[in-house]
Image (cartoon, rainbow over all chains, first blue to last red):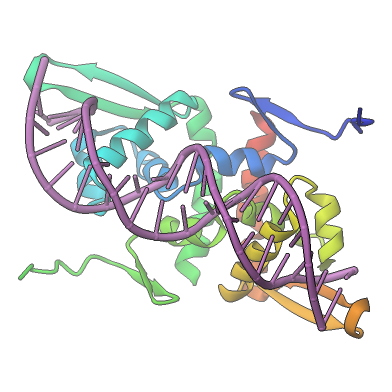
Length: 113
Length: 113
DNA sequence: CGGTATCCCGGCCGATACTG
DNA sequence: CAGTATCGGCCGGGATACCG
């Protein structure tokens, strides 16, 4: 029984956001997602390559974060090869690539601190 | 007993970061900090103004997040007036202002989704 | 007006071990 | 190689009530 003032909003993945920054932070926020996306900007990477680039993250957390990024449509996972000699590549989707400029700005800012 | 490969790193607030994105996400990540900073880009605001701009956040969480932003040197808190008729203004520091371009890119990206 | 105090839950994230 | 299973700590953040 609210007047429901029709505040501008956006829906994505069944969630409502009243500020585009909220949406962005929900998709790339957290301790690792931004870093993963940043390293994928320079090209697709294997799971093991990401582990080398980000040695602080555990296998499990890396796996979970990659899955979330995939669910949110920011990266694409592709499997090549057989059973115990898998080759899995992660690359940015077009949506994922579009966030490049923002990550580069964040990076510049972080470097300047 | 590690060779301590001298990976490039940065220290801030007694924490070590191996990627500028990590540092940036630590300072502006979370559910609200980016949104707060974004609204402060257009000029200093009172506590109550921020509540109106971001009605989803509770008083308490807003207070906590503002305190963290202040601790990290991104905003400055100034008190005017007396006891129960306080006027408190929050404005970006120079460091806080420098993150404007990144927030604007994030915003553009969020709007485009 | 601009906050605090208290309680608490859910989820992020890590450690360790195991697997197709 | 590229993960998953299990366990658990920590803390971000919400609900509610109260304060100078």
